[in-house]
Amino acid sequence: MQAEQILTAPAFGGTDEEQALAAELFQIYLAQGRFFSDGAPIRLSLLQLVEAMGKSQPRVRTWPRRIEEALSASPDVFAQEGSGDDLSFVTTRRGVSPGGSSGRREQVLTARFATPQPKRERPVRKAPVLAPAESIVIATETQTPIAPPIDTTPFEVVSVLPEPAPAITPVTAQQIDALTATDSEIAQAIQEALGSEAAVARWGDQWIGEERLQRLSRGDLRRIEDFIREQPERIATDVEIAQDVLGIRPNAADYASMLFAVNYRLSREPREFEYLGSATHGVWSLANASAIGTAKRKASEIGQDYRVLLEYDYSAEPAEEGLVEHILSYYEYTYGVLPFDANLRSIMPMPGFKDQRAVRITFESPQTGETVQAELRFPTGNRGGYIAGLETFYAENLIPGAVLTIEKTDQPQHYLLEYFRVSGEDRKLLALDEKKGKYIFRPTTFYCATQDEFVLSENRVPRFADQKPLDERSKRHPEQVIAAAFERAGENVQTSDDPKYYALIADLQAAANVERPIPAELLRDILVNDTHPEFSVDESTEDAFFYTPTA
Image (cartoon, rainbow, N blue to C red; front, side, top):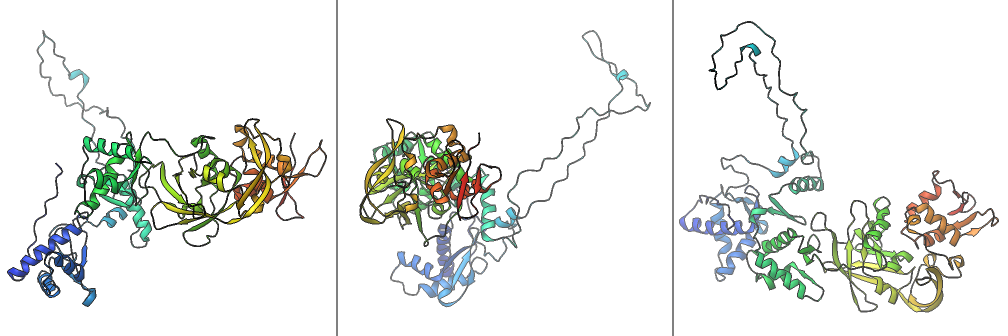
């Protein structure tokens, strides 16, 4: 059974009636601050207290006066703040006014983390005094040890203790100056300190002592597993688990802590469950469930392709808050993905747990009326992040070069995915003949607005025809991908025996992103960098470049 901390009831002042009312109000404070530390201030306005008491005795109209008199009679327990409609009373779980003293030393969490403790002095260990070897007598079965005479002759003492190891500075929380640090810096320092504490449970930005959380039995875990398996999408929210499986009602006093317990306790069972929620919205799936994504390329390989986002991650000016515009590249269209770059990161959910793999999100298309299940996969040490699961939606409604808008909604992990519908247009567009393993141009009718610079049509890049995709080794080197883009989308301005290709950066951007993600910043860095002398700048034309193949 989980042990609860026992707090001593404070001594209230005033008449017997005021003391009784103050004790009842103090229980409301304890319920409000059940997750607070013992010395943290718990603040409730007079209006909140009147509303709480009115639920049990709604016909009493003198609650404001009675509550104010009862709490004012105990200044050592309740501190008064404000006046009139802004009147509030503050206390702590110990029943001591935040401005008073309980006889115990106050420990402020921020100060403890922000102020490092002084380095402890290492005590000097004295070497033992050894007796001379001649004075030692070894006892055997036939000998009786005889006490040697005391020899006062001075001799040299040699220490047999190893040299003391150098002092190791312990890894502590981030050291900051609480007087000059911002709120975010203080919050970060506290998060880093609490994150290393095994006795502290975390979910998103919420923290609680691990021993205070309700525990789930093995039977509870089995019933939760069966419940998730019965759901159409093989996922369930923490709310559904708490209400439908554990029978916790939303109006129960421990409902909020039970949601926290569900998310934290299931996160400790990685062999059975996988968290697919955010820092504020719990979603759970089974650990062995199939992931969302394309069958054309492994998820690990796509993550390696997007590794470039770990170094080149620039954001464009947002159209408006909560809205991101994006132009679909050929690579993204082929594999049904979106890059988890700085733009999308501004509207996408944050993980609820450290080392979380993915978050389940949904996209709603107002143009088609459908809702698409997708998965946001977070970056790891050597893999970039991306969104997977849009392959079918792209193939049925869009083409490479389509202009998309992604908008955040009030529903958690739910987004609007919109494109601009236009009258039908026919073009021969780049496609891959998977049987022959070559690029072709296929007649296509599409109804979406596009950015012409990213549309790879036969009229624009005819030399792509009958070209084979680059091998995996070449794809790992961006400069080789860019060289191939010159040959496919550029113009040879010299002879076939001594080629030199000319291309605009817009054409290179579209052609290079056929094979792998190449951000515009990476493309420009390679073209102007002295480490790649095969590329050079055309000084006469803006954003025009040359490529001279090396022998």
